[in-house]
Image 1: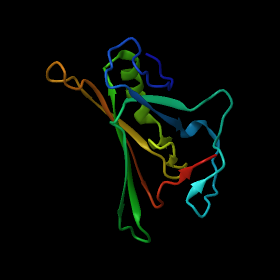
Image 2: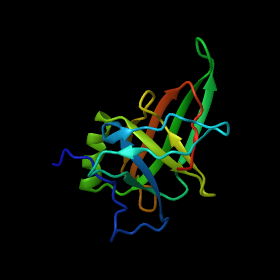
Image 3: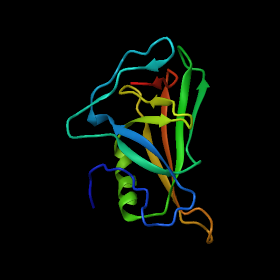
Length: 164
């Protein structure tokens, strides 16, 4: 069993009628520099610098299952935002199951792309996202079988747009 983080497979050569959408994410340990400046439009325009030899990882999710939510609640000094990114990964295959075992030990930054192409940068070194995944084997043929994943964070700031 590999203990190295890898991209989550789109399950090639497996039936996947619904199609996929791809999320990109990065473990904090792979970040060399993180852009601090956010302009007046709540947009980060400088790119994240990644340590040499590493790249963003990808997660192939079932299309139309991903959803980013940002819920405001009162905090001690200012509002806090409960941020959640959910989705489904079809099929339970060994390589993905292994990654889902490893990922809870890491914290992540995520680039989330809206259907219109705009991107949001979810998380920061100070407020990273945690990962969890739950398996559902499906009760009968034709029902969903795979992992339902969730990235979660609590942040004092709304997620900025990302346009490096």
